[in-house]
Length: 511
Image (cartoon, rainbow, N blue to C red; front, side, top):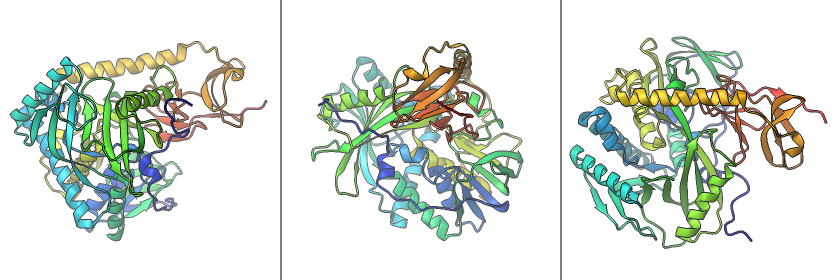
């Protein structure tokens, strides 16, 4: 028997432990005051906020409600977003760094208050957050971050070696009174209240483009005319407006979950070194306490080797530090990182004031999604929001750090594009094992192939329908992933994540 038992299939603990309502497909052209594109936590929170305004609001989702990024988070409700405040001070200065803290702190309080006001039974728990270090270099980072906290007036923070973890760390930065919860139960509570207030939800309804300032064209040809359009689709599906694909990169990370013993860590944790190790627990509906171990992040589509190795690395960490030998769930998540680490929230471009976007949460989506929803809801209602300028996608000058990040991001994209077109393919269909996929050579052509456990073969043209980069197969998730801008497809070629909205071209296979 192997040292650690991993689940054979990828499944999120959050989605496995909750049922979701089903909604109809939008089957006609329609007019509304506000259309929200994307039914994740950002879109649902914005819908809830706007549902009390008297406006006609509708939410459309390309796949299923809460089937995207929100369903695969670790769901830490905290303002401690890694060692970010020293970076923000260097990039933006004290005033804006403090504003970022205040925005996320207000979001944390909003979540806490809403859970209480609506009586949402999402197992919200107040816990301490720990940023910890295992190396001398990591300790130096923590000390600088502590200095940043003091400089910005962030309270409830201490440096301590006492973390409650079963292993020793060199130092940690403890921040009191943070939170954790079941994100999908919370989101469902908001959604139910929004529906009660008149919001309409549609799923299986994928937007294709925004043709004018107020017209959304759907993939099936229907149209939605709206006074305000809120693009909450994780990666902006209409990224030609503002060229967002040049200003962000996508990163995947991995999570394992399993029931834990009574003596479990009581806080939420993340280290400052690489590889990342994220730790929290969750109280399950079955009364058991589950431990979630996360990390092993990499840019989407660019992992060298079999992606299942990332789960195996996390399992080895769990075995070594927590004596865990069997896991009940495994899944991976994807998020977007902006040039300067602050999300893009607001008008997509200066020429599209009625089309708003929210993206780039850099894996800290619980509070940042709430910040984004409030900025967008205030914009719709004509209310000044004091955080809008900081988060604005059109924020003025690119700083030196932004220019460097911009050049690096786009140089890497160009490299991947060229690499995919020039790579020599040696595998044939006969080389492909059951339950796996890869790029093969078939009849002299480069083809994407997947062979299921029964031996059935699925062939696709392995070229992303966004901007033409060659996709790579992700064996851990049985998906085709684009290394350029993060689009993902099922093994049959259907879109899982944007910016692509068209499926991979299918190739007929006959033996």
